[in-house]
Length: 325
Image (tube, rainbow, N blue to C red; front, side, top):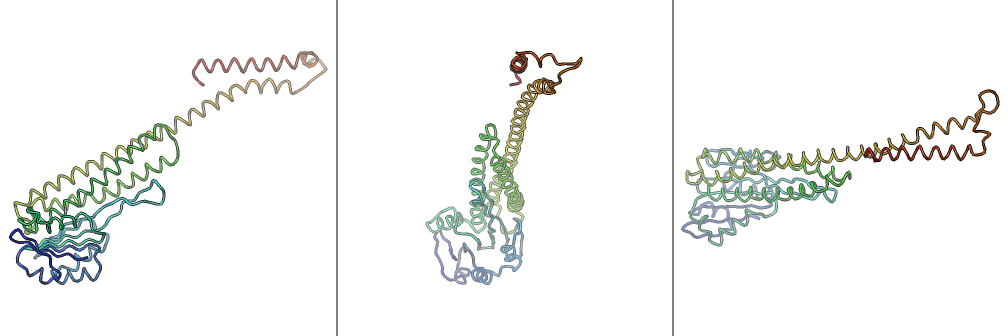
């Protein structure tokens, strides 16, 4: 899905041929979504892109900015949450997006379905004045901006999950709760690993280090950099919230276990003297100087049972008054 657009004099013209688009006067923007190997080779040949940059698009490479002689290469990751194996589990999915900024052209390569970048190109085709009146570096800033804005959407999803967890941890000791907590912690860790390199990559553009970034465009990259700083701070805050929820859950489980142990201890304490009495009368010794007088008493058995019930009742009342039960 190769889209080629050339805009000059506040007009945008779509091209079918990459060579014609590359040689046309004005700013050339080529965007490829769900790029196949054949499409990547075609774009690489038309714009003389370095093989190592193309190789980075195919590998699991962290976000970065590299400056070549004729262009600047920016590699970012489009991030989304995908369903996991269970109903509540989610996984952080990443797709590389390569942005090549030349003197009068910009190329955006994506390996995923058409997304926010395609909407920016559609806006340019409809005559977006801000795009049509500026150069390729501004177009690249808009493409990077929509990628970073999607990070906020992902954090909103995670925030919703955290709110649900915070409601559960105080009332539930279900094992699914701790699984949800661990799942969100893994998502935040994976997300953090993508945000920090992206922050460094955009920071180079915000400082205007590459030759292809004009001074008047630096402020737009600085705005994106500020967004990434905010996203990094939110990520750390959410990690703290999840850690706090995990501590609350463990404390709730420990408290529940203590309550169970307290009840069992009280029950065992009540039955200890009863077992002692039953053990003595279970010996059934008769005759001799140590004859148990209760063995020959008509009311010995009912008296022993009544005494055991009274002891249990007294101990139960005592434990209740001490708030052990």
